[in-house]
Amino acid sequence: MTLTVGPLAAEPGRKTRGVVPVDLGLSTVAIPLVLVNGSRPGPRVVITGGVHGGEFVGIDAATRLGGFLEPDDVTGQVVICPVANPPAVYDGRLGKSPLDDVNINRVFPGDPAGGPTERLAAWLFENLISGADAYADLHSGGIDETLLDFVGYRLTSDAELDARTRAMAHSVGYERVLFGRHAEGGNSHAAAARQGIPAILVETGQLGERDPAQARSLLDGLYRLLHHLGVIEAPLHVAPVRVQPREWVWTGSVVSPATGLWYPGAVTGDEVTEGQAVGHVIDPADGSEHKVTATATGRILYGMNGLTVGPGAELAAIAVPHD
Image (tube, rainbow, N blue to C red; front, side, top):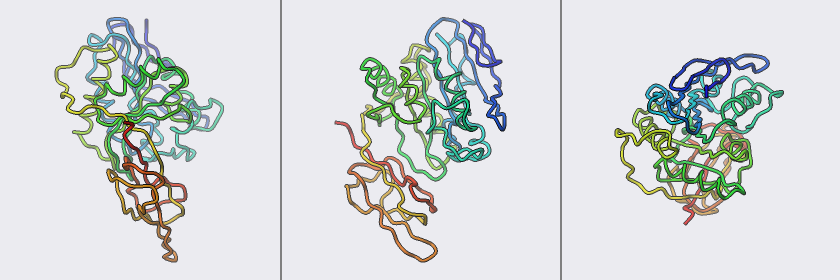
């Protein structure tokens, strides 16, 4: 079958690269796509990067994969969108879009009659994600965020779907695999799970770094994923997996109680216990201090590195091994 997204099309055994214009109401954005239609029929896999600005490793790895992957290597179809949210990536460079101050990864599956970011989410979901047999969304620690690499997925009420998704998450070859106990919320992979699509989130890199080694590590993980899904043969140039994936579960989130300056006392990778002081927020106007404590026991998997924070800003996310 011909692989078609908007005006772009790739016949079987062909690869097409280009942009698709998407009307967001007040403006139009150009979504870059790589369509790889394999020489043999098989599953359709969709990979997105650049859902958030300031997260460069996923964009880099998705772009590299789009350049390397050829139709003769592929069984099935691969749709790669290296920059899913151009306003945030090119103009804002942060999680929220400069068009309307909305975090797109909180509003999936979107609303075609909503604001600009909701319309973009709706277009991505309808034209890319909803047609997938498997979906991977690539993220990194943003420019103000430290992070330990992990793969995430969501549980649903469908045991067979959950087993397929869990196998996908483990196939990437990362040490930490985080699962959410439900598929609620506006994250892209959660919305996909609610539609019955095996979907994972991959987090690699931190602080908005453009680290070639991290991009290479993520690219290797994507090759392992595609091999697991039966899309490509086992690539010879991929580094062997040296860790055994271990399942983790989220236990708590620490948020800022006020506007001010954040001074962490515990950082990403640290073990903390519930009630432990993990830092403080200082009001720069009067010097008053707000003590911040851990809401749960576990390890900090990602944390706020920026100095300035507002009320409700996430300062740390805590998880524990599931076993």
